[in-house]
Amino acid sequence: MTDDEVKIKSIYYRKKLLKYIKMANAGHTGGSLSCVDILNVLYNRILNVTPETFNDPGRDRYIQSKGHSVEALYVVLADRGFFPEEELETFYGYGSDYTGHPTRKVKGIEHNTGGLGHGLAFSVGVALAGQLDHAAYRVFTLLGDGELAEGSNWESLMAAAHYHLDNLCVIVDRNALQLTGKTEEMCGLEPLAQKLEAFGQEVRMVDGHNITALTEVLGMLPFTAGKPSVVIAKTIKGKGISFMENNPKWHHGVPNDRQYEQAQQELETRLAEIKS
Amino acid sequence: MSFTPGAEFGKANQEVVAGTLLTLARENKNVLVVTSDSRGSGKLMPYAAAVPDQLIEVGIAEQNLVGVAAGLASAGKTVYAVSIGISAGVSYGALGSTHHAIHDIAVLRAINNITIIVPADNLETTEAIKAAAQMSHPVYIRFGKRPMPHLHPSGSPFEVGKALKIRDGRDIAFVATGETVYPALKAAEEMEQSGYSCRVISMHTIKPLDIEAVIRAAEECRAIVTVEEHRTAGGLGEACAAILMEANMQVPFKIVGIPDEYTMTGNQLEIFAHYGLTAPGLIRTAITLLEGNTG
View (cartoon, rainbow over the protein chains, first blue to last red):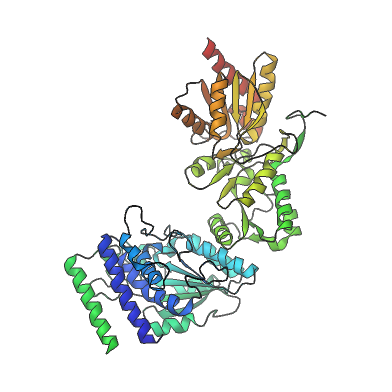
């Protein structure tokens, strides 16, 4: 797949996740738009996992600790054939497996997440098991930046470094916003890269919306043998929709009909630009 | 030779756990023990020396301990996470309230898909640890550090969710769990000398609870006393009371445990005595209940 083809997928993923959020009249719009390019690159270029190999012990694992951005994950998994996309019409509905945070009831999902601060510890356990078994699989974990205020993450980072888990890659969706407002105004994270380095991680920064750059950095794992890899992906919450970008109101905002039309129109325009 | 429950003492259940884990680990490379600086308190030093590759230390980080254990289990390992349940109840009574584990059952009972086992003697402990390895969902096992008497003849059948009757009787039924089963047995033996007929049940599995054993006790005995090394709120007693109410069964009933207050400190047996969890206290409770009933 060429870079342009992957970029086009990102546009379609954005259109679809907005469609299902609109249909359900609920969802975590801003965070899904900020991490969807990362998911696109992971599932279309990096991860060694398919619907057919999902139960294979040797598969790569993706654990989305920031479980609230589940819409991005659902549309990517549907596109990769883990389940028929029509099933997403039940998103948020009574009795649906497609709940507002991921659960293992949905094929392709490794672990129930969304209670923030637990996905990384789980990932460390999976990576440790891989190390003990001399297995070739890798474990990828997506953390929200606001989520890093949960102290358990730092316990897990220490353990990951202690056990030299170079089969673990932590990606931080650094959109600098959380539900209430700016992360630096809630409980400041900076200097984040230095903190992570001090905790024994090998850190790289990347533009979390640049498909080429994401592909390059995630293709270089592990950054250093014997150390866990961390990618700080600089992102924009609400990315791709002008009026949603960098506005915490869209953390779980749902567009009205007019806003929805405008959002789809902006994505169509971007699609035409890439295709031309 | 006939077996008398409680006549002879075995090891601390904690030591039995450590020994059983070592046996399991030697049989199966996929068995792992994860510790949070708890190998010493868990009597796991011999385990660590014998199978160092099957012990994972995460440091004093209990949240991480549980998450890492879950991740290992999801990748096919059989994982024992060693934390608060290893010196449960008031095993560490004199260390003060931060070291009393007397709320664990209440918290965990409210979570679905978890089995809770509180073994009373060495046999129940060995069997519980072995049974957990066969289960595909989380199991919480809590035990203490004092030597426990043998309550069942060796080779007795043990089934998770199925209470074990240690002696039968028709006046009072002591429904006890963990390290309070022995004092209940002592109370029963003493009461028998005064002409009371006493049943003693070891309710080793708190969840799922053996509903039938509770209902049968209510049908066949004049009164029920539940006994636990735990807060009276949210533990075995309340679970039994709920079963009886829902079955529309009226029976004189008393929950003996640790009440909702700043807990008395001291060694485990002193705290037991303080809250009526030793034979004299249990006898007093039982006789009051029975005489109130006949009176």
